[in-house]
Image (cartoon, rainbow, N blue to C red; front, side):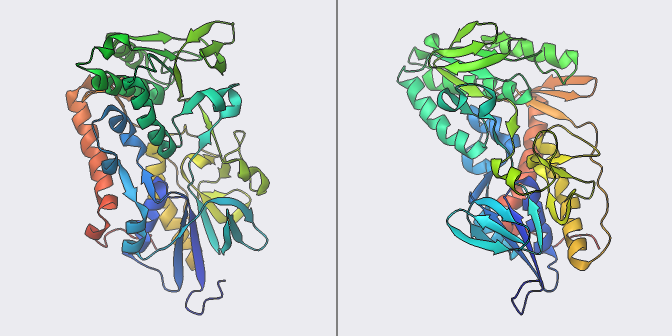
Length: 392
């Protein structure tokens, strides 16, 4: 228990991801007696991944897709510690921070996202730009745009053929072409998407064909079943020795958990992510929870997708509250399927749900409405109403 006479239980949230912003909102709506919530975050703004393609394409201003964690913590009564977690002392129940004193916890939760798996491709750290973490990518995006306008970049490659890679390529292409419009520079730009397997391998054939059509219409060359071995100063080197020329290479491939997870002694899955049970507790420590991309559900594995991080928020908030009260926790079973709305670089989207496919400008309007509605409360915490709270 915390030594503060006014606080008997310290709940510490490490990371300002999609699940944790809901936890802040839930505890702000109904604070528990003698419980203090602390958010430890490296970044004071957190981007919403669902709106990233729109930011890249220029359809959203960056501010529209970022949550101000300082304002959110203040509005919900949470303590905020600006620092980067780098380790864990489980015996003393402390989170270790870079350049700061450790933070004590009674109950701990991680929602720190993922980092690029630069070790998987030789030369990736030196010659690639990773799409995650999003904040770092957006900072690099402005430099890339400047280089393109100056004529220093003419050929752009994206490695990764999932929905994220397709959206990144089409959005980036739309932005760079718009930047060059009227100068004649658009004539000099070319784009290539490289993927180890089939394009959009986890989606149905009709969605794959629709996205191939949109890529072709945008003049994007698509190289499927071309595993990448390395990045070099001149471009991408495939395992069969093929060299794909490129002035800049962006990576939308599988990412990895923070490296320091390995030294915590916490249970991890085959990918190194924190192994969590259906109650969102780490499998070998009932006082530690995890959600979002840094967590791996051991009984109900799901792909890394923002929708699962968002939907983990309510059950995570409820179970953190139950743990603080000493009550039995409830199991969460995330849905098997979710509606994917794949942006095409303009106000147009392709919908994918199981075997179904649809597309049109109206679907982008639906996506825009859903994203803005979710963001609105967190971007304007002063409008919060006490209607959501951890379930008893």
